[in-house]
Amino acid sequence: MTGREILQKMKVKAGFASSSETGKGKTKVSGRCIRHGYHLMKGKSYHPMEDYLVAEYKKVNNYELGLFAIFDGHLGHAVADYLRSHLFENILREPEFWSDIESAIRKAYERTDSKILEKQAELGRGGSTAVTAILIDGVKLVVANIGDSRAVISKSGVAIQLSVDHEPSKERQLIEGKGGFVSNIPGDVPRVDGRLAVARAFGDRSLKAHLSSEPDVADEIIDEDAEFLILASDGLWKVMSNQEAVDFIKDVKDPQTAARNLTEEAVARKSKDDISCIVVRFN
Image 1 (spheres, rainbow, N blue to C red):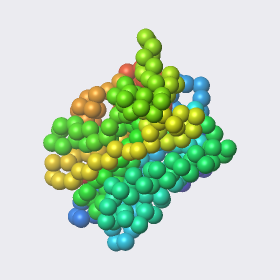
Image 2 (cartoon, rainbow, N blue to C red; image 1 turned 135 degrees about the vertical axis):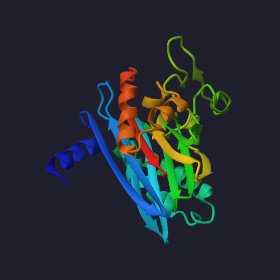
Image 3 (cartoon, rainbow, N blue to C red; image 1 turned 120 degrees about the vertical axis):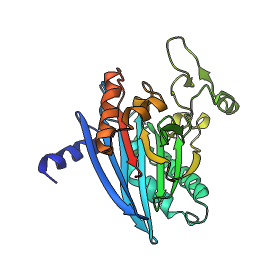
Image 4 (cartoon, one colour; image 1 turned 90 degrees about the vertical axis):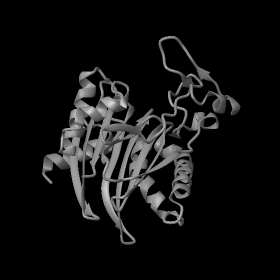
């Protein structure tokens, strides 16, 4: 790694990356080459970069795991950075990970959120959304999320959303049942208690009584129809539909180039938010 790359990584970790970060990787499992690429770009806001991601492979108990995630922070980057360092570690540490992965993910999300709330003095009052994807031996994909970062898989050219957008308007009954409210001010998006534009998130201690941190979990078999997976923060999805994103990169074989192209297209479409994107190609 060059000195310039090391400096860029230090800036990203501190939350002050000035423009973008990019990278790629690959592994071979079950006779299949799995390749991924990622690209992050800071938006036009005046606060430091608040997006973080994970894209790596790890061998555990003779299984080859692909670990991919997007963490989109708000009111500071500390919670998203904490998740980048600890969430997968907590998931893999759950005793029932190999017997009941969905239960393990739910428990790890809950325990991680509790730890974030305990560490408020260190991490601040902000929070983060999350979308995580665990690829097991290149065959089984398990996706979990809270918030509005999104996972979309392309199967035979058709975009299939695997995550759930946790919008306050969709979860109004749950929020109001906890004593909160959903604002609906003209010219603005619905917000929990007039403040947060997602109904589920890590952290956000001041809103936690009305805010859920329970993930939605879905699994998918990676068969011969599965072409690639896109994980991205809402900076991309605000300006592109699922199918538009799939169509835009369907002929781009290099996943790093595909992730960069999606990010740059979102900027061209006037997205002002931080944008993080991971593309995983299965064949």
